[in-house]
Image (cartoon, rainbow, N blue to C red; front, side, top):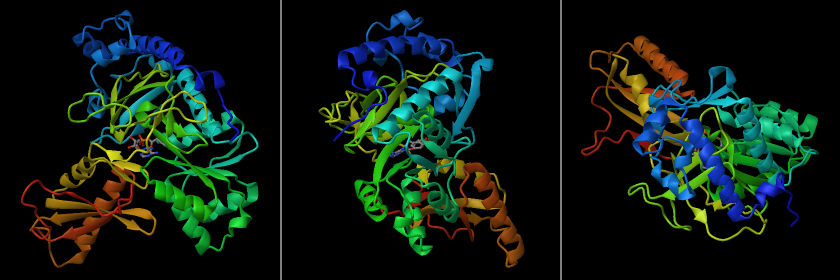
Length: 437
Ligand code: DLL
């Protein structure tokens, strides 16, 4: 196989040099952190008051973990390390409550992020001759903008189609000769079934590759998409707290995701004991970002379960590879690529006085896409034979939920006392999607 490197010096950097680079960047990131109210306090508690207190990479472990709830507590500006006029963009993702996790980026931060995404795209064999249809959400979500900029950096022709409307997607593919797409794996499966349904022949499009991520999927699902669409599918991992896509990506070997260690320091810990686990074993991924000045985040507990694949990759990159992410150590749900915490749903429905005490969140497959149903009991006083007010209530719950979680749920109202009550801990979520990861 012929491999191509976007930034050969860094991608193939010997480990000792890579680690020296990491130490230098870590000090710089700690210096940025010390400019934020949150880390000034947090780091001082561990005896770190200046960047020089970090002497070796092992000193990283003196720094306490940062969690999603820390980010929420620091909302809106507790993690901002540069003057506001240096910030040119923000992105946000779901928090466990209505408060989003917000990340600010300077011009330099966006340039660095973009070059990591370009590196990912190029590692799959794409180049400026490609036509790239970015079928993922833009807006506050990082997926659309991140890949858009990365694709342009590589020099591809970027079609900012966003998700949805498969008929228009096919039209764009045919009119402009799209060779590579970016989507969630579930949307790719949906695209395939719509192609059949709408009679769009495989040979009428020039697709060769797809980047698929933002939600967990199995090796079997990858293979299925590859066979059905006759393309190569590359796994793409990232999270908004760490910029978004561009954190870890598969090379042409398609055997694990290279985590860009010049931009991130990764640790795998046991989520119970919080102790590191050896290479080859699975645990929770903890990340420190080294390439961002506006919102430095140190030792972030991603809650994603994975591990380091031992041994080098034939592609020659020295950056370690992660196993496919198999799940999370918290209760975050990913529904058609959108992150949702059960607590966000609870917050909305419990604020309505007509809603009773019990509710149930169900996620199922509807064809290849996910479908969310929120079942709530109504108070005894509300449940009347007249369906009009009930329909209005249902619609109000649906609209308010959609505004909060950005997913359009089905809402079912149930008579008080009719939803199952568990004897132990309440079971509020039934994820009925087949688990093949
Ligand atoms: O999903 C960033 C992204 C955009 C990644 C486009 C890849 C492609 P968030 O919305 O903050 O950011 O969600 C991050 O999604 O912590 C994982 O739980 C999950 N996730 C992302 N990529 C993968 C993947 C974007 N390839 C959360 N496999 C992460 C499994 C993934 N889970």
